[in-house]
Image 1 (tube, helix red, strand yellow):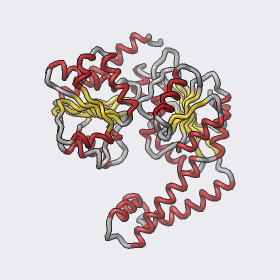
Image 2 (cartoon, one colour; image 1 turned 180 degrees about the vertical axis):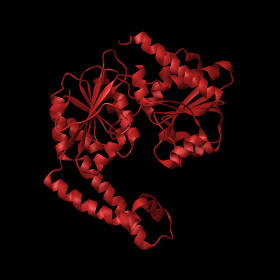
Image 3 (cartoon, helix red, strand yellow; image 1 turned 180 degrees about the horizontal axis):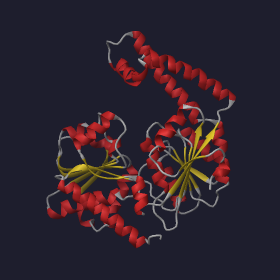
Length: 397
């Protein structure tokens, strides 16, 4: 039996309060991991709101990765009845947090914390300028260094996976369709030549630990010249190989075909590079508009407004929609660019499964067969349910 919106909100409220309570019992310091659509923003709002209500002198800082999330968080406090606290809350992007060294906050909330763990951003945490700390993200960072640092800064106190959110009814059910395309003969020839060079440099750097060896070789002034050259060649091959995959012409053809077969849907398209995202957009113009980091603030807002009010049915992005995008009627996704990080996949799927009565999210992932991208894809979806490996677009049901 399908749950009503009231019942869904009651379930979400129960788990949100559970997350805040577990954080409080852990000494007001910890991380929560919950699938996109769970409502992590409200958890942060409750943690800050209750802290500020209990102490008229308390202040708060929210760190986010994008300006879009800055605006959203400010609106959330009014939405949930904490508008009296807004004048004691500062919202800032991670890249500006270095300006705050020496400041003190009663409570700090870090949204999408996996994007705030670089060596530069960590300087903020090193100065311990807070009494309470709440970190939030969809899942643990995949990099060992980042994962260990996060759990050191703020140990895990609450976790709710994306599929658990689906089973509870908090977010819409979904189906993923993995659709292969071939490289053209020219692309395939280029890819093979670059891949052969990649393997050569990989073995030159130690094969199984090549990534770390390349990093060390370039950071250590004492590294032998041959090792530095191998590291430079190694990274160059990675970039060139990914560029061929990202710009595969058959991806563009398949994207256009799928869009025109689903004109009744509200579609999000994801490219692997900004330039290819523009190509995806142009291929189905005037049905689509692009939204990515190379667009101006005015252009991005116009794109979001056009999609939200239904003026256009297709919104294409690269990474800019991975966080902070909330349009519940977006119900069909076409992913044409895959990375090695499964978190990126989880967040993109999350854009399509915001709860709406009767909604089922569909995500088509177009990948290059027999390439590194296929390996990344298998890794990205290995823990997801309802994944279908199909041979042609007509198999999408």
